[in-house]
Image 1 (cartoon, rainbow, N blue to C red):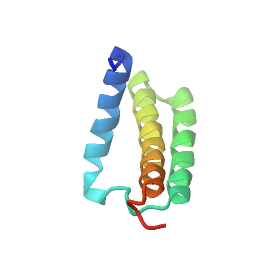
Image 2 (cartoon, one colour; image 1 turned 120 degrees about the vertical axis):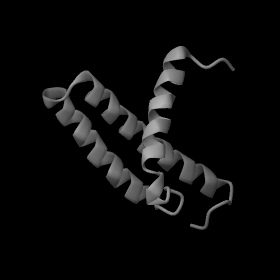
Image 3 (cartoon, rainbow, N blue to C red; image 1 turned 45 degrees about the vertical axis):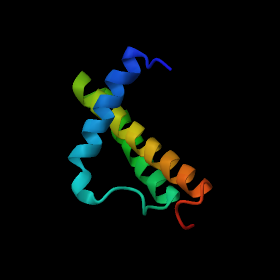
Image 4 (cartoon, rainbow, N blue to C red; image 1 turned 90 degrees about the horizontal axis):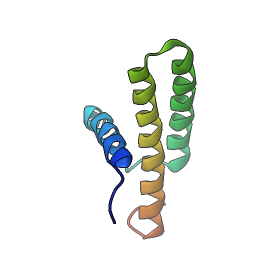
Amino acid sequence: MKVRREVSWFSGRVEKKLRVNDFKGGWRREQPLRLYQKLQNELYELYRSFGMGTNGEIIDECADVAAFAMMIADNVHRRRNGKVPR
């Protein structure tokens, strides 16, 4: 499958965000509900950035939101496949 240019560009932004936070130990032991709570906080930060942020800050907040959504999906996917204890 060919990846769209926009998806490739944005996934690079998400990966950059994840790498900056690698020191935190990752998301694999986090419960999906806890990640969802963090996602809600990021959504609020995104909302605030529309009124107070630059275009770059808005894009960064979008990447944060996407990163937490990916973390939830990854943990649920691994649990579904029996790779993570419930």
